[in-house]
Image 1 (cartoon, rainbow, N blue to C red):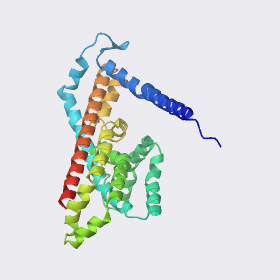
Image 2: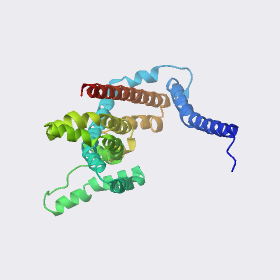
Image 3: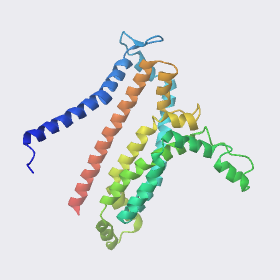
Image 4: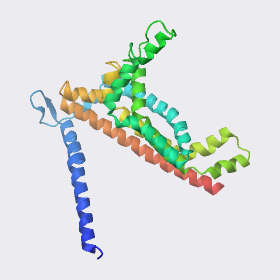
Length: 294
């Protein structure tokens, strides 16, 4: 068999790069450019967005009424992220300690429910948390409570929905961090007299910090935009930023304001990703300094 010509390999590489750049331009760059342009236009009931350009939509974002939605969305997303971390951290640690074949089986079992559409799974949660749902029926039938507990259309329901949908995105980065964790460090610290709490605080936690930060960002950022979870489980009083954007596009039909709110959310996400990069560099730098001091 003759070896492929260098020019053919180069042409194939150029073709792949061209197709990839074309796909990104068509599906990512162009839509975002349209949203940015629309955010500076003037709303119109007939044409949705018209000239001239203005900053009116961005000034609306700073109105106090949207600050309440903003901080409430941050609160719900932060609590959901914390719950995912509290559940996912020990779960990822247990998975990382298993033999490779068992770890793969457990990961598949964790991911199987997520092969179903998240909207369908959110409806399932609605049936479980309802007044005639599985939890209330079980509690009433066992005599633990006399009247059904209101769980739907509360902050609790929204947080449960967000945790259920986003938990795997917390577990996967943590597993990667735990797999890189050397058992020799823990054994050495044990020989030096460190107890379990000291080993966790001074060795395990710092070395898994990049996974914690990555998992928190991967959960926190999408949580603020999952409008369907808040719509189905939270009601009108527990909105996320995604609900405001969806309502501006589909209900109020103020596309410039919806676009401005979307750009604001994108800027927030970019700022958080930048903080993640800085935090990751800080953790790596501290790790290097600690290694030098050993």
